[in-house]
Length: 82
Image (cartoon, rainbow, N blue to C red):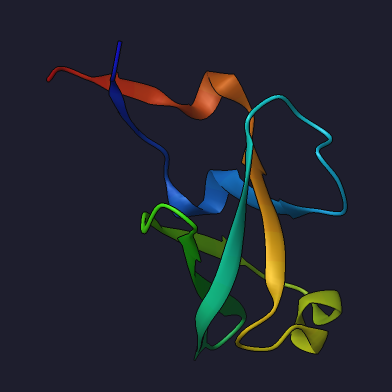
């Protein structure tokens, strides 16, 4: 069964490993600096685009083309009707 869901960008995070059951590998495509907030546009191997919104200096070391593990807590996912 296929379903769709939505997650706000601030509820999606980068992980060092598959720390949560809801993770996906993606390539960092674009970095957008907006003051204290940084938006990371990522693309999965299946072509899905995800936006991760974060702040903090530790993320300033990542660069476009990096392989990332992106994850979220299930409570933040909103299932959409098909």
